[in-house]
Image (cartoon, rainbow, N blue to C red; front, side, top):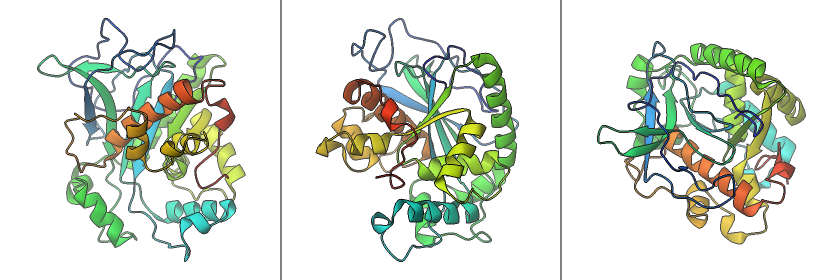
Length: 316
């Protein structure tokens, strides 16, 4: 994400433009304005999906933050113990083993400004939509690549068509090259500002993104080396909204994404996505809403700054 000091949004990756033209509403369209007062949000989420690497570039509204979610055929290396029993170095070793060996399937991306405002588009009926982007990659082949069968079946049940992904998806190397160009341009425009990246339970999300930007090379051997590489490649700060929620001394904010979103009243109950959908675009939107609520409503004293770089499972 762009930091709160940034005021220019870089050109987006080679994704198809959102429905019609991005167009701000007369009033702020997010939970907060600059006076920290709650305001109404548009009722519907629109996920813009990209299947082709030749899609045109689009420009987002001015944004200062970005939230992502990835989907992958996960955990091909069971730890032998539950993840909760692993010490942080063992957790990172498990993340590294999986990400080094497995292939990312989807990336979800949601942009917002420092107040949590998400880009707005109008659908064909003139309804305002908050926009999230979702990229499906072509790299994974279930007939060839190592994977956990139950993870692949879960992703299928969530709506991922692996045959279509192979035929029409975006090559992760091509996406990474475009993303690297966007980030390089953003560094030149920021003039000392920082990008800010957030996820929910983000260790794997950030790890797959770093792997793509590093040309598919194995992750560094330690978390500290990984954090330094992530900062260099992504050009900013990392936050995990799940860690923030679980370390704010509120028991109702411990748990999965849907439970935390419901506790914070940021869950989209009338998204056009089917109820069972658990795809990256919708998850990134929920993660963005949770991160904004945590930063502005719960951890308002420092805006969550004390949680920078702390990931669920990798830090106590």
